[in-house]
Image (cartoon, rainbow, N blue to C red; front, side, top):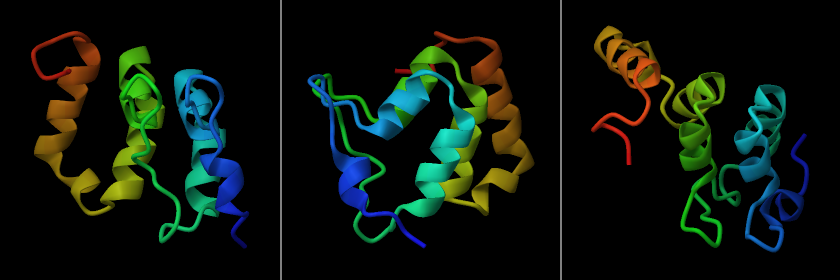
Length: 102
């Protein structure tokens, strides 16, 4: 059952959608719920807020690795299993602010 994506796409005064806010606060279960219940054909996971950030960008800025893992699995489930990528992601999470991040 998909919930109407209009609820997921509505933003606050800063353009933050529920997905942005859940990502900002590290609410993994809420992010997972939104990703699972939204219709991938009509829901824009890469919608940007007024500061030009996607929800995934925000999760990265706040260092919420469990949320980032969800985005990785949701956007490309097969690539999440690559050992080299897991090593690189582990490095990026361990050393926030390194040259790999925006």
